[in-house]
Image 1 (cartoon, rainbow, N blue to C red):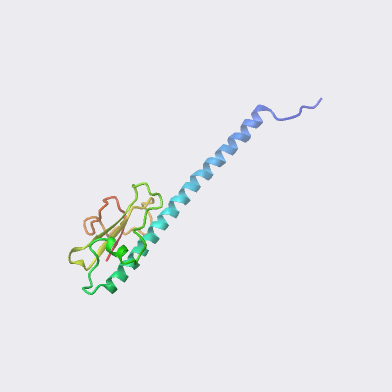
Image 2: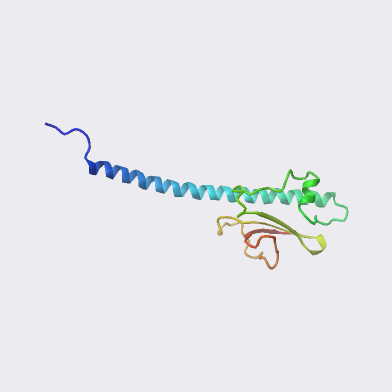
Length: 139
């Protein structure tokens, strides 16, 4: 008489292989999601730079705005961008330099080894509202 079905050991081996594969996929998916959010943050900073350039073109005294709200009020950008996670941990910041001839834009990226992070720009040279900002544009 032949046995039908699978033994308990065979079923457990298959389930453990499936569990390992799911764990690998989950880790990779979370890395991809973090990279995607960082790309969105970098894109938002680029949009903010464009809006600030338009503001400077329209402004007669050729100074950058005191706050980013002034850029929004002129409808150069619909609103201050919100972070993709929107948890309050990751934020954008804008700070006008003394004299109004320059500015600093900051965002906190999840990947601290992102190639867009310029290590030459620090909180000392370009202070932003959030000390944890690690992606900073300085003009």
